[in-house]
Every structure is written in C-alpha cells, then in structure tokens.
Amino acid sequence: MMRHQFYLRFGKRWLDFCLGALVLTFGFPALALVALLVRVKLGSPVLFRQERPGLRGRSFTILKFRTMTDRCDADGCLLPDAVRLTTFGRWLRSTSLDELPEFLNVLRGEMSLVGPRPLMMDYLPRYTAAQMRRHEVLPGITGLAQVSGRNAQTWEERFRLDLWYVENVSLLLDLKILFSTVKKVLVREGIQAAGHSTMPEFTGSSHSSNP
Image 1 (cartoon, one colour):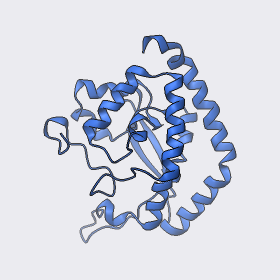
Image 2 (cartoon, rainbow, N blue to C red; image 1 turned 120 degrees about the vertical axis):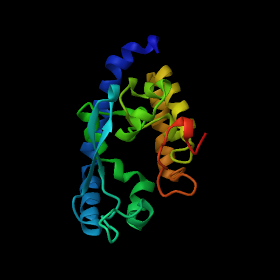
Image 3 (tube, helix red, strand yellow; image 1 turned 90 degrees about the vertical axis):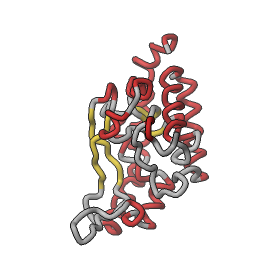
C-alpha cells in the first residue's frame, strides 16, 4: 500500500468528490422519483439513518432509502427483516437504488466510492485485530467483497477480501471495482445470502456460524 500513498491521501478523495457530485447532479431526477415512491409505499421517514463505523472506527450516520416497514409484534418489538422487507423494498435493494443517498456521505467525506462496506457498530468488539484493519480506509458504497459475491459470501470471505483491498488499494483497483459493480447491479447478482433476506449477523470469528 505504501507505493499508493499519494492516491490514498489525495487522488482517492478527488475521484470520490468528482464522481459523487456527477452522480448526484445527473441522478437527481432518479433520487426524487425513488424518494416519492418510498414515501407512497412505505411512508415516512423516507431515509433510513443509522450509525456505522467509518475511518478508524469513528461513527457516522449512513443514509439510505428506506426498504422496510415498521411492523411490530404484540409486544411492540420489530418483526424480523424477512417480514418487514416488502416486494418494493426487495426491488430497491436488488437494483441498489436504496444506496443512492450514500453519495451524500461520499461528498461529506464520511465514505468513499470504493472500500469495505460499513457494518454495524455492535460488530466492533467482535473483530479480530486483522479484521479491525478494514477501518484503516474509508468505508465504501461498493467494495472488493461486493463485486466478488455481494451478500452471497461467508463473513470470513468478506473480511479476507476487505483486508486484501486495504493492503492493495490503488486507482486501477478502484476503477476495476467500480466497473464490476455496474455489471453486478445490472445482472442483480449475489443480492442475498443463502437462506437469508439480508446478510446474517456477524457474531465473531471464534463462534461464527460461517467459519
């Protein structure tokens, strides 16, 4: 990674800002239309906000279009994701349209176009020292793990790919991942993990269900 320090410190941010601004500018009609559809079909709030770990594990608020309802059981607890994820929500996820607001996170410098996906804050204490290295770079809208299978991977495979990216980040690698992402989105490949509507919870490598 040392030979790509200039790109990592300066060029990557320039690429993020320029491409992010282009997407938000020319994609504004799509953003507005999706926001309207979410409001009509799922209600408000239109945006899903959640704290996620960013660079060096510092928290930031990720922005996505809402894909689930707020349905609860008799005790007021949210129902499982598979129940709350509607057909419309599944379509948003399969097309990756739900992630368009993350370009705002990119412009604010909280995320990059390419990097390890920002996971849950609760996962931080469960990482090994090697897995924690995924936070040495900004989290990304897409990443090496996503173009290598998206959600159809084990946690160990995803972390291995994240670490490889951290150690080999470069302009050429980022461009390859971006082009591969477009292809993955168009064919809607690897959206779900087997047997799950979303990626199953990471419980830690020592007792993970995906060793």
